[in-house]
Amino acid sequence: MRSWLTANLPLKLLSLAVAAGIWLWVTGEEKLEFSFPAPLILQSLPESMALATPAPDQVMVRLRAPEELLKRLAAGDIDARLDLTGLGAGGHQIPVSPDRVRVPFGAEVIKVSPEMVWLVVEPRVSREVPVEPRVEGQLPPGFVLGKVEVRPARVAVEGPEGAVGGLRSASTERVPLDGHREPFAARVNALVGNPLLRVLADDPVTVSVQVVPARDYNGRGGRN
Image (tube, rainbow, N blue to C red; front, side):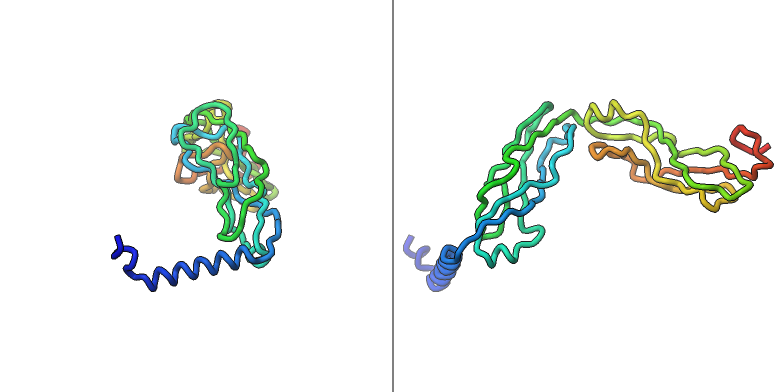
């Protein structure tokens, strides 16, 4: 026991002195209070579950700290982290207590607002939906829009059960018509317009657009 206590004794004494000096410096300075926005980070939600309502992006954290420390605070120095391990389907009130907030050494969390976060969790499911092309713009005079096709015609979408079940279709990013005088194809992403859902396809879809001279248009999406 004695050998463990005396091993590297000068280094241990120096470390103790440094720690004591930092503690005296922090506790000896006049402290102020200030509120900062802090990102709210949700961690460890089970893979089989998904959020059915959007969670707040941030919370307000009131800190007490020396003035110099408050002046040096930057984005990324503070965040609040909620552990969602084991959360099942249903509504949950999750406390955002001061001990869930990460702050720099020397700062003390006085209050977090809101103190509770309401989360609704549903089973995570996926299904395929049709893709609707979003073709917009003005063709040059004398040209008309013919047939528009999307390939693949369907994409898989994943998210909370209720939102996935209520989704009728996905759409593409905007495909501009302006200036086109002949058929063309564009590779664009499929979108669902709901932050709780995501398209599972890694690759863009291809939108094939027929542009035909008006004199050749047969009214059925192609040439005479």
